[in-house]
Length: 427
Image 1 (cartoon, rainbow, N blue to C red):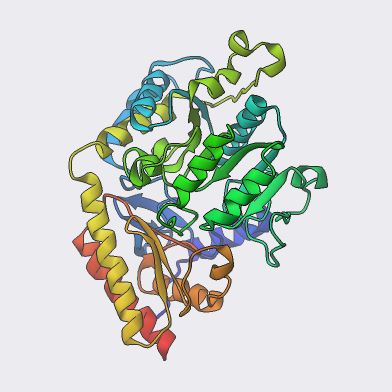
Image 2 (image 1 turned 135 degrees about the vertical axis):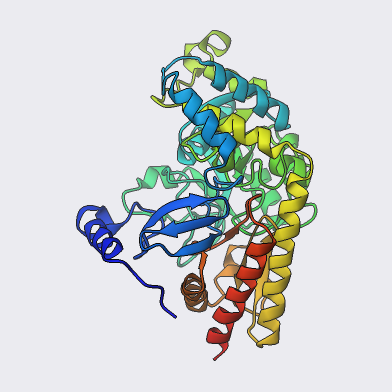
């Protein structure tokens, strides 16, 4: 079944191919051109409706065009769109983040996850007066040069040697990174201890892409970094306000020294943040640390009032009783159905993640780290994604993102799409 394409959508896709580098925005790239979104659904330029599990790659945690978020944005637009100065919504959002995230004694706003993780690493370097950062193979920390060390190596190198994942990255940058395997506490701790005198910090996605941490893994990292006074950075661009209102820090019960926040925290607008202990965040204030140790951070749209107003409205919605319980219940139904339907069709599959963020790996092997994901059948996954699209389910190349707008109707429609797509895969 192929969904119909209007002449207008075909024309727009052709213009994208002609005028956009690579034919895309650098994100999801195919023939679909989206026109609108409301709640848990999106509509393309041909009028086809989909249950949406892409959610703008995660930011739309309360659903598209939530009326309270839209109202807050419209109200702020009448007051001004940006000031490059302190403003009330930004100050109130910093307060809300400080109250929500266990490590967040101070907050500094940015506009992208790439910026937030870059500044978090820079803060750790300023604090420790060291250069090297340890990250975990397969971890995604945005598009800054440091983050693109062993994010997705085709041929992984022996630990702790990094592999640059992009052209144009200076060798000197890559040489400041050390790589450890996710979910292997012993190897990570050994690397941290061996390199303790040159490490500025350790950065990790507490839930790496789709992989939950093994019991005790995050606490082991917390213990060894605390013992050697090395800042632990949680990249919570994805997990902040998603796994729980207090993010992965609350959900897994492990508190880092610094964190990067984004996606859901921005309410669908370009807003991220670095937050952390006052002793580290002091490097943003020259009066506290002196000019030599000062870390300047300037961004034209950092903390702009439209984005912060949208974020405040989003957080008010998320704080309501039952919000996370309802979202997890919907996601748990989908995870269980996907696993059962694969089993019934004798398709080797592992459904991995948390109910608010999960995916399927087509393999009979356990998925625990980046290298185990390489054993999965990626071509089968790509076909599954295309088949789901034909059955009215929109998602990215990886991940099902849940929102609080998804409901039982979406579950029924999605399970029907699972059935149709998996029947085709098994045929």
